Length: 270
Length: 270
Image (cartoon, rainbow over all chains, first blue to last red; front, side, top):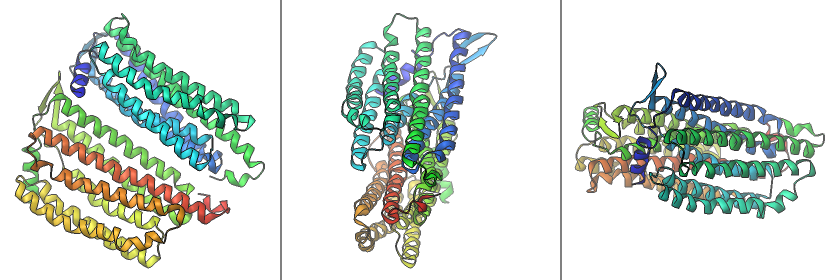
């Protein structure tokens, strides 16, 4: 049923009459994101050797998030090209549906990992790390799963229903980031407390962007404009939430490594 | 003979009349699994430097298992796309058979390795490691080989015969995991004994899933529903048995490294 709506969605809603400019704007945005995510991945993994043992896993996972995103942007890019053909500046739908599901498949993997990297870089006690990572990861997956039926719904009422349900785990995540986790953040060393708060804020800001994009179809925008706005919106949010937060996590890890090492460079060895 | 039946199977049994949603559901599941297996591989190999020397091989092999699976899910994904063409939401069989054999080729390589990684992370005596790894690895390969003729059989009687034969090594493996290996598991350090039992249970639970999927064709489900259920079932079982168990093995290795290192951080150096 959901899948049927998905397919319907990818046929009706997605196969808009795009102008050549609209097509190439999205095309270029996808290619840009593929490059940006791949670059972030390489930076994080290569730089991993510069943080102390305690933070290596946080950096590994940050790079994993951007790597998974890079893979999906490659697929999304290919799917966009398969869905439309451009000749002499005229865009025509090929009849092959644009696979929107890639985004949700990506988020299902990356969003829980994003919260886990944030928890890991804080270096809490083993038990607190485990319990927070588990709860936040589960809530994140639930949020994505509940959002999908709405994304592929062909009518806005269904979209609103699932969007609202998905907002419940979203609220829980934000509540625990700004509530329960605040104590742990305040107990971070002075030289990184600001950065950790920045990472939390960037997570909140970029995530807050998704529901807004999710609601674009409610607007009175023309079908093709809606499609372009949704694609560009999600793409921008992905870059900030994954590459942006990943680089912040790296900065936090470096500063904490330096502070904790005080001179014993040994622990830097990769 | 078997090959002929396999081909027949891949032409008749596999080329069902799928709906567009059945097609895209399996399509998305295959892409998700390709991403998940690749991500698990990268995580395991990058994090390998964080476990002490004694456990590096267990982590290398865990990553090898998910890497081999990623390769085969790429092939399976491509084969699925080659077997059907979707235009304007209508799925038609191209006449190119969906190659189911990839799964068995994958299992023939990965299932023995899965048991070997489980034995290795327990760090038994060299001689016990060798004999257990050999026996379990051989039994696992035999289990896969015996299952294949049934998988590709066009009638359920043949399927049942080979399925039953394949259940003999399966039973032996479970018997030795829960029998002979129990003593070794009880002799594991306290901080990991629970995790090792979890890994064993997850192996049992996920493996127990395969025979159930294997028997789906006995049900009265429509051909296309059967095909979709079999593909999704094997896919889910693969993710748990390979990526899930791999991450557990990593956690065991990390905890044991920390416990054994007591302070001599040197042994962490990659």
